[in-house]
Image (cartoon, rainbow, N blue to C red; front, top):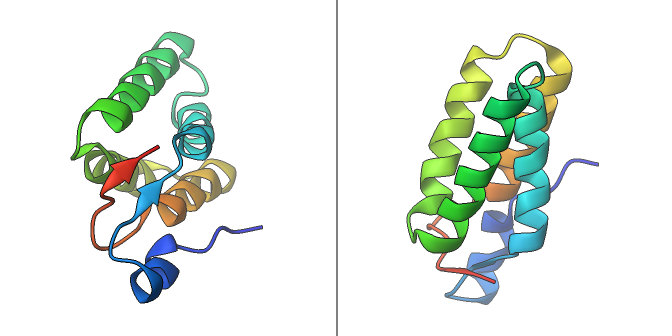
Length: 101
């Protein structure tokens, strides 16, 4: 099941958007698996860096979206592309996410 972008729902009902860290890291794990399937060190490093950025950098979600867009543009296989697209759908929330919980 494809997630619906929170950006379509939230602005109608609230001025503040919150990104659920637990679920966000599930999507980041899927992206890491898709992008770094053959390199476990690179997978772990990217995932650790992504989770740290998400939790501690107020621009983290936007930076991760840009990284995932780059991964998607370079990825040729359909299954990894689908995982990256699902994560982008989950993270895409204009205007930028205001808070991580």
